[in-house]
Amino acid sequence: MVPSIVSDTTLAADVPESQQTPANAPTNLLFSLSQRTVVITGAGRGLGITLAVAVLEAGGDAVCLDILPAPSEAEWNVITKIQKASNSQARYYQCDITKEDAVTQTLSEAASEAANRGKPIRGLISCAGVQQMIDAIDYPLNGFRRILEVNVAGSFLVARETARLMRDQGIQGSIVFIASMSGQIANRGIHCSAYNTSKAAVQQMTRSLAVEWGEYGIRVNSLSPGYIRTAMTDQLLEEKPELDKLWMAGALLGRLGAPEDFKAPAIFLLADGSSFMTGADLRVDGGHCASA
Ligand SMILES: NC(=O)c1ccc[n+]([C@@H]2O[C@H](COP(=O)([O-])OP(=O)(O)OC[C@H]3O[C@@H](n4cnc5c(N)ncnc54)[C@H](O)[C@@H]3O)[C@@H](O)[C@H]2O)c1
Image 1 (tube, protein in one colour):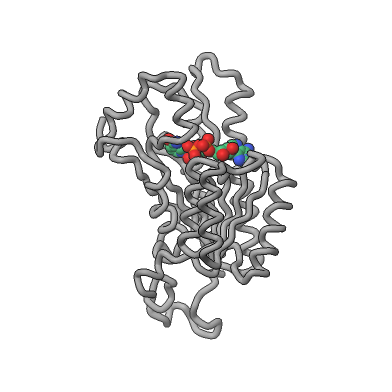
Image 2 (cartoon, rainbow, N blue to C red):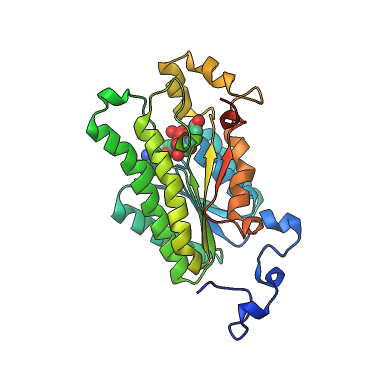
């Protein structure tokens, strides 16, 4: 049963849609995350920690999970400043998203704290991911499996636990998987068959979970970036410097992406403004996939 803003005694069919949607609010509130906490995986650095900043800036609390022992100092300093100047809070947990016990325990602890603060968990940005450039013909099976283990199974595990927490409390929420344009296209110049396969799986998992969890009022969408300058792509460029020219050839706006380019798209997908959106993929790639 979808938790609804109409009373239990009123049939939803009798109530106009405009009164059923949380999006029926002034536009500036449609991007607000106030009164809610968002879990972010891969929030130790790169895109994930920038999206944690965005969550705080939008008025939410952030629960940051990463396998790294501590987050990047420069970005965490930004988070600390926002916390001091607002009512928002971020907590960092070292957690491997492929370990079921660790994920369950971490999220259960985070959910209790969020509930005590009156800002229950109502969202997830599943951003943790790993990349590897290896010719498919030489790909060791264990290496291929490891990419799927983190990017697909680990992402599923955190999404399932977050969805359970929301369902058990009868709370509506939004799950955002960070996929990639590589889920739809195979990038020229880099041989990443496991990574590309994993991102296509994330996009299909998005649709599958949206079908199952709509009944709990949980929306599930994916956000598919193009090339972003982060530690992940720096490593690829270090291994193959000629990639820069190739990537720029498809950059219709004359530049690669920055983590900040994904703040607004991620907040849009989490907040009430996207209330009628589920099972969709939002591609933000500087036009890369628009040209051959
Ligand atoms: N950088 C790009 O060009 C690009 C493009 C498209 C999609 N993406 C996706 O964006 C996401 C973030 O990528 P990024 O560029 O910031 O890379 P990144 O390597 O800087 O960040 C990934 C983070 O995930 C964490 N992580 C890895 N394995 C983990 C595990 N088992 N448990 C918990 N945390 C784990 C890492 O420690 C790291 O902090 C990834 O899912 C990536 O596939 C990146």
